[in-house]
Image (cartoon, rainbow, N blue to C red; front, side, top):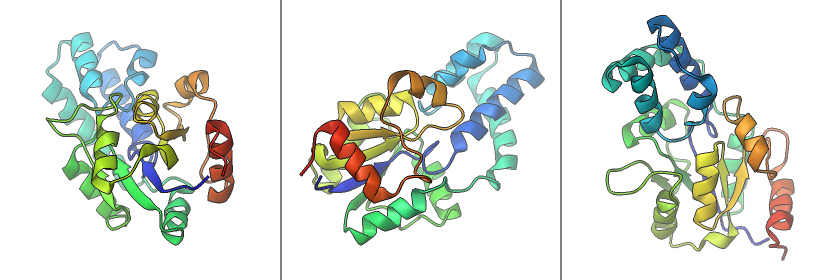
Length: 221
């Protein structure tokens, strides 16, 4: 497979903010006496909190802004303990050695992503960073990925995209990329039920994964 680029989701893939955030949502709901269905809540992983906030607000008749403030307060107490997920730095180094393009494609807002990349020492790691904006549909729509492709002047067929959530996998696949799941504690159950191509980036070398992806997508050579 003549790989040309690697695209990464952020929340849940580059750093497991997803699990920490969802745990904070559950903690907030418990403290405030808001009755939620945890399985229903987890189904919103990866959507940039839009549907999650709407769901919790409906369960507790609490304003979305109030929920977000309460969850953020808890999340910031955990943020210092969140680090880059296993294997991600090695995959970035691999891409740079091979002169592959690197993109970060996220449903989160630019300011949030910029702060995390600075905090994790990844600010200069990506050739292109595409984040949530008012004029581009979010994942599971493919538009954020399509925007990244346009910015880098690339075609999708020889690009690997790493995602942790069903929404992310749907978006990458719809954009024509070779989507690979790197699930976490929050997303693993739904990913296991739908996507056989998974990889723990901390346990498989980039060269081996590229071969695996080529075989799965029929792109040998």
